[in-house]
Structure formats: C-alpha cells, structure tokens
Amino acid sequence: MGKITSFSDLIGIIKDKASQSKAVLVSSNPTKNKTLSYHLSVLRATTHDPSTPPGNRHLTVLLSAGSGSRATAASAVEAIMDRLHTTGDACVALKSLIIVHHIVKHGRFILQDQLSVFPATGGRNYLKLSGFRDEKSPLMWELSSWVRWYALYLENLLSTSRIMGFFISSTSNTIQKHEYEEMVSSLRNSDLLREIDALVSLLEEACKIPDLPFSGGKSLADKIIHLVGEDYVSSINELYVRLNEFKERSLSLSFGDSIELVCALKRLESCKERLSDICVGVWKKALIDGFWSLVREVKGMIGNLEDNYGQIVGIGREKRYESARFTDRLVIGYSDAVRFSSSRFLNVAC
Image (cartoon, rainbow, N blue to C red; front, side, top):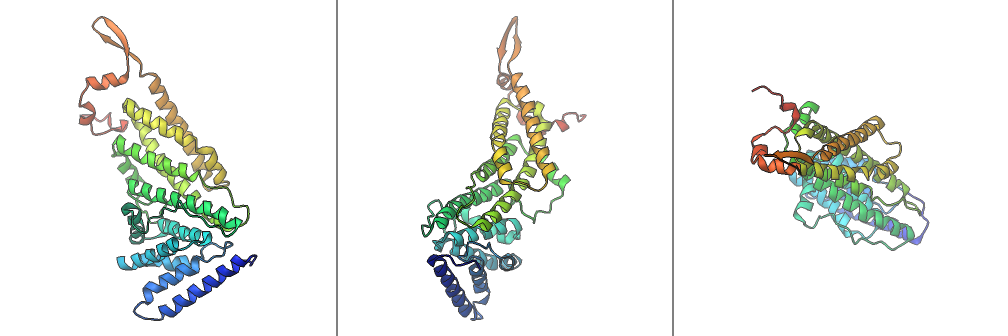
C-alpha cells in the first residue's frame, strides 16, 4: 500500500476496505460464491492506490475463469466491466483496463471471446471512456488522460484482433510458423492491405500515449508501457510476414494496391521515432531493426514500380504515355482469373 499523502488517499483506502469487506461477507453465501469471488478479486486488484498495479495473484484468479464454462468467463468479465464503468477514480479505471489488457494477452479464448463481444455490439461494456475526468487532485487529472487514451487503445486492439481473426499479442496462439506463412500467402491483396491498415492504425494509436505523469503513478504507467511494448513487437511480427508476402507479389501488384501499400508504409514510418521513444531498450532489437529495414526495402521496390507506371504504349503507329491502369482495363477479368497473387506461384509449370 502506498504512502498516504492526502485526504483523498485516505478516502480511497477506506473505500477499498469497505468494498472488499462487503464482498467477503456476501461471498460467504455458497450459491453466489464463484461469481462473487471474481468480484472480490477485481476489487483487490483495482485499489485506489496509484503506486501499485494489479497484483499477479489477483490477475491469476481472474484468468482462471477461462478454464471454466462460458457463464463463468462471462461472470469474470462482467465483474471487471462493472468496476470500470461505475468508478470515477482514475487509478481504479486504469487498473481495470490493465486487467482487460492482460485478458487479451494471457487469457484463454473463452475469456477473450466474452471480452471481445462487447465492443462489437456496442453494449454496456463498451470500453469507450472518452469523457472520463477525475479532478480530485493534479495526479488524478493527469491519470485521467491515460484512462481516455488507454481505453481507446484497447478498443483499437480488440477491433484489430477481430480483423486479423485472432488476438494480437496473445500467448494462446499456437499455430506453427510455416502453416501461418502459408495461410498469409493464400490471402488476397485486399485482405492483406486491410490487415496491414488495421495493424498500422494500432501502432498509430500507441504513438498517442500520454507523457509520464509528473505527480506520481509511475508504476501504473510503466506497467502499461510494458504491455503496449509487447503489442508493438507482436504487431511488427504480423506486419513482417505480410510485407514479405507483398515483396513476393511486387511485380503483380495493381496500381491501386501499390498506392495503398505505399501510403500504409509512409504512415508506418511516421510512427518509428515515437515507438522507439516509448519502447526504450525494448526486447528483440534485432527483430525490430530487421523489420524497419524490410519496410524501407518494400517501400523502395514499390516506389520504383510506381516510377515505371508511366510507360510508352504503342497503338498502331502512335505512341503515347499511359498509366498502367490502362493496361489493367485492357485485360478485363485477368486478375480475377489468376488466384495465386504471390510471384512464388508464377513459375509453376502447367
């Protein structure tokens, strides 16, 4: 427990003890024990103390809900969301959001699934907290900006995960690398571009992280930065596979796909400096350096192709410059007939 420095700190401690005592008394009822045990774990993990993030012991209890039934998982998620949406305290809200992030990263699918349906349906458990304000103290005011940003970031993480078809940064993903790369190679250009756009949007949102709070709460901020840093590494892993695939397909890309890809790469490059500032001393430096080298390489390849799109097309005795899009119009339906977009398949003998 952190040091009491103000009357509001004392009030927070009293609220924590009162809420937990009430939950203990109610949970003694055997018919409600399981549901209320999650409620009690949420209360203990989301105290008003700005100096401590949620404890691992309480996080483990909440994650264990993923080993039970769907109803059990729903009860745990409901307890977290009730805490998040009924509090006006920035510390409690941030800790609730940290729990949500832990579920995305470490929860079993049944628990993640219960969490992910809420933003999709726009129901009561929607994470949107854009109007959150805690004006009790300068620290709470600073942390309020973290609550607003973190909720938006997690919404973006969940929506990106829906587009990808799995939870970004989740430790429960077990697909083998060669199977995954084969799956990516079977995707259409439009699907790959959609996934790249979602991943870039997630990194753009990560770049909007507020400055470290001046008045305290550094341990909470550090915990969040660490989780976001892990998402960063996972995101560039996903982007790496997809950019490698586009590298293979570079000679067969349409003009529109090339432009869309270059725009995404430019957006991505604009994030590099800020992401480096956030993730100082981040893990897997060689992977990250290799990723940014690939971004430059693919952007250069596509850029060179763009320069060649203005080409001389002979029509009878006349020659004129035409966009490569004109060529696409001449070969109507050709791109639809060829199912394999990757150049790896272009040399297959018929």
